[in-house]
Length: 251
Image (cartoon, rainbow, N blue to C red; front, side, top):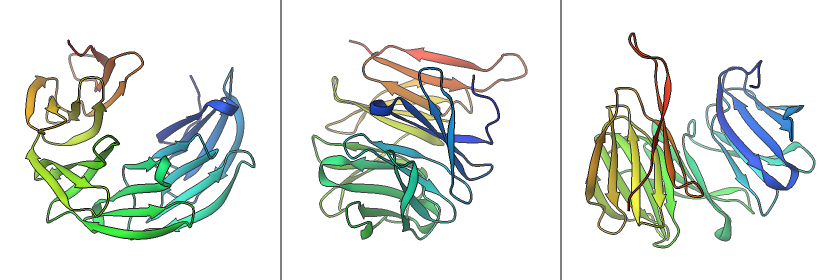
C-alpha cells in the first residue's frame, strides 16, 4: 500500500528505472516511487487535476494529461517537466503511437480528438466526433491503423482512421463505458461499462460477439495480455464489499 495520495487517477511504470508514477487529481501532482520497495522519490507539481498517465519507454518520457487542457511531458532521467502542450479542454483518455511520435487525445468537452506530434510538441490535427459526445475510453489498433473511441452519448464505438481521422465504423455498444482494450491474440475488443456489462466485439467487423453481465457501476478495468486476463473493479454495495472480478478469455 502507498499512503498519502490525493485522489490518485493515473498510474504509469518505467521499466528502465523501476519507477512508478502516480497522477493525483486532488492536488495536481505527479508523484514518483522508486522500486523495489516503491518509496517516495520526488513530486512534480502540474497545477490541477492530474489525470491519465502514459509512458514512452523508448524515449524515457512520461506524458500526463491535466488541468483545464494540457499534456505535460516529463523527462524521466531529469525527473522534471520539459514541455507543455495546450489543448482546448481537459484531456481524458489518450494513447501514444510511439513509432509515429504521435499522441491521440480525447477532449470530451470540445467534442473532438486532438492529434499531437510529440517531437515538435504541437497539435497537428483536430478530429470531430461527428455529433457524439462524452468520448472517454480510447485504444489504438496498430495493425489496422485505427483509433478506437467509446462514446457515452450515444453509447457507441467510433472507429477512426489514423491517417486522416475519417470514420471507418460506428456501432452500438454498452452504456457508461470507461475502459477499452484490444486483444490482438483473438482479434477482439473488450469494453467495460458502468451500465453493468462487458461487451466483446469482433476487431474486424466491430460487431458484438457477447455481452457479459456484471454489476452497475463496474466500469474500470484492465486487460493484461501477458496474463491473458481481464480485471474488472466492482464497487461496494449495501450487500457486498468492493471486489475485483477476473475474466479469462476463451478459447
